[in-house]
Image 1: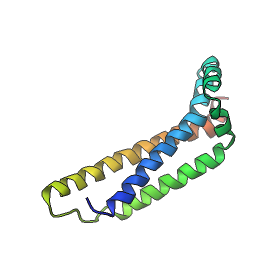
Image 2: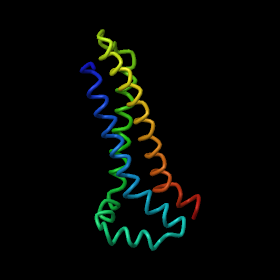
Image 3: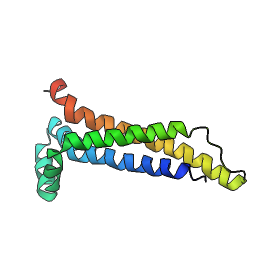
Image 4: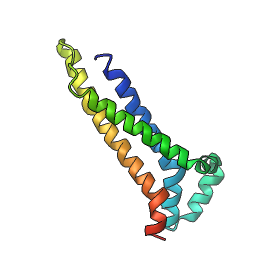
Length: 127
């Protein structure tokens, strides 16, 4: 695996985790309330009171996650034609890592989009 793949892969994983953070802090409670499960949200907030503290800064959280996703996508695009090593085993690992990072980046983007919808748009569409 080449050194240029490692930062891209790490950034893709970080983008995925920040996307899940936006989903847990903001989208999940909004979705549960929209589905009529307000008692579940009350139990979640009671069990994990940090959800409320994180939700206060949801704008910053979404902005940070969006910047990380965009940066990961740009870096992945920039290294899309970078050569893999000549060794067959390392070349195979390089190709698998590129495919995996693409799937992870796509999943992170989907999670971010769902979180964004429930945090900012659903209140107007469903309300």
